[in-house]
Image (cartoon, rainbow, N blue to C red; front, side):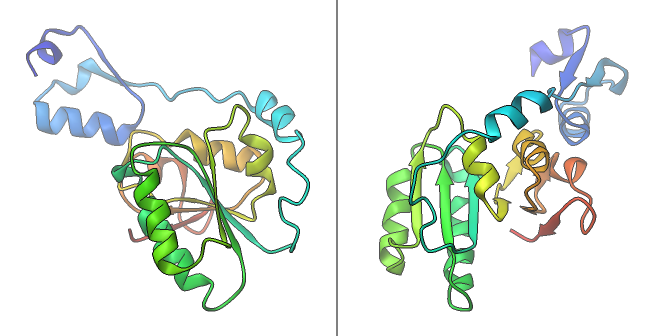
Amino acid sequence: FFLYHKADAIICVSRSLAKHIEKFLLIDKRKIKVIYVPVNIKEIRIFSEGKIPDGYNAKNLPIVGTISRLSKEKGVNYLIEAFYDLIKKMDARLVIIGDGEEKNTLKEMVRSFGIEDKVSFLGWLENPYSHLKAMDVFVLSSLWEGFPNVIIESMVCGIPVVATRSVGGIEEAIKNGIDGLLVPI
């Protein structure tokens, strides 16, 4: 708190974060600047053409996926619950790319639902873009975000996005019904 007031300028990754800093830390808004993290579109397109393992989707089912740190604020547990409801209506696969302290808890949740054959935990990947491009829909289930670059990366790969209407820059990346769908947490 003390250091923010001493700064000549504060750079934020979203307008939402800038507003929070201004409101909660009582910072003069003239000191706050928003600079979005750049996304290398050309590089993402090249990497998205990478090969994914044979048999990745042997049953040719729709793939719902996410790329996320597996921590509480990312809300992957809500994604798993929603996926469990989805497969009661249609057959599909869930691909979770990422790692984190909630991984074992999330795997146990999948086991408790009895859907281990429908959910793949791929861990951290050097190149997630080829897997991203293989998804039929990308889901960002975060409870809050600074600015979710992964939404932009999904759009670059031509993948429809569903994201939670949560605190942070998600609504700066998606206009509901235009760039993707925003849903309650």
